[in-house]
Image (cartoon, rainbow, N blue to C red; front, side, top):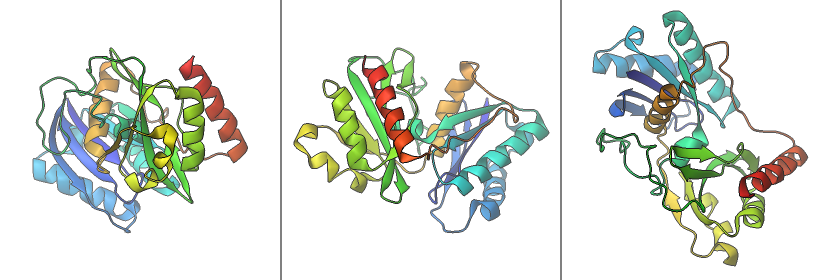
Length: 263
């Protein structure tokens, strides 16, 4: 299965082409130039270098959020157009999941950036400790972070509710209230967001792993898993997950989700 994966959620966006779990090529450039002007140019450059065309793609995979409203909209609109034109399925993937799956707690599979692996899906991890959670964090700007809570299962990575957006200290405070008995691993491309909050005694010894901001290879891997589960959508069903909501609603939402996930 030939896969085109798109991440336009931030200025560190990326594009990847993979054949099943094997990464064929990736483009990533941190740039202030908007994706509306460079996305199609970069896709054409990568596919041309690999000798493939958009018509050859079997599965389009896109980061559906969280992230920049404008950036996400560009990526989703492009994928919708391609999927409609070539009658191909779409896999919508969370950017937080693409960070979480980079944790060392997830074993085996493709190593992003090398195209090498064990031949097994990255998501086929063996569960050694069901009381372990993986907490991916992304920069939401304006003094806030996007946060998610995941745990390993026999099938791979499972989200414990939806993502949220709030101040890092507030997020960690709510996390500690609900998951203090869990072994917690934090994963982020922006470790400076968590260094000070994680200095608090309640998080002493919690691993902080640095993930790659180049998410497209991991998005491709997650999209492949979605396709194999039959969880693809078409152009009409594809929606963004912007997350940003009123602070009061977010606080209530996170409390409810953490309570449900820890019960």
